Length: 269
Image 1: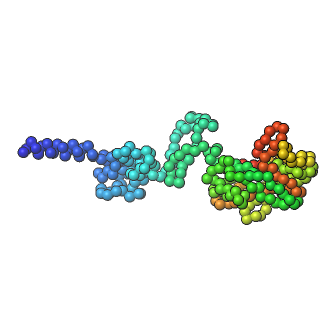
Image 2: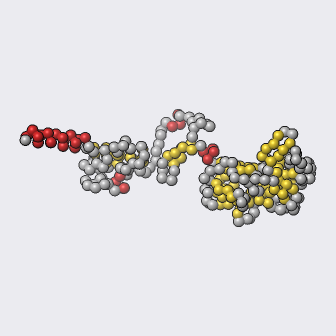
Image 3: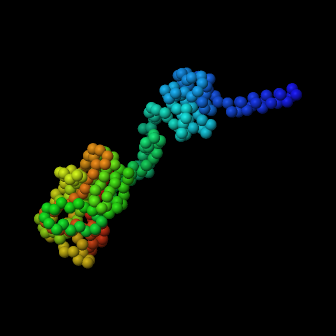
């Protein structure tokens, strides 16, 4: 009987040791390894959020919490900043390295920021301007490149910015069926309509060739500016306003080759 009791005690002691939680500065550890830095936790129950600020914890799945005893990532910092003192000695490689960002919950992730910030769209089809000084909205096809920064409506030609900030805009267009000396105007206008946020003016150098089945060549102009978007959901449209009737080409075609010619590129800076 004594031998059986001794065996039971040994098994119980081994089980208790095997599943024990280690606490430093606390008699009430909450995880596999728990340090109460300020020794301010209660002797029973879970510590409050304020008490956890100075705690360090390691769970049984090897997740580490600093300022939290319930980490959800391999390293989870409850609050505060992270500093790497010698990071300047480790130089990144442009075009290969990725940018580290924090999502809405604070989890670090990597993105290709150059591609992520870019919007690029091309004119869906030729657009005819039938009267002088008409302000026509350029209608672009579905974006070739875009990101969560932007939403583009292909039916209305309205670009919506989903985040405030500074944006670099380059607008290019080719005008044809227009005579020498005609004024060509590209613009960026807010929605609802108001004064130009930016506009570029150019005078045609020569009368453009007549459109044929094999020739589609126009007078090319482009305009680059920076616009400041004050709030999320801010909207703009891209316009053309020559001082005489003309056609805006979506593509050019000639002896040197064919390709897109009227497009817009926006990048968050």
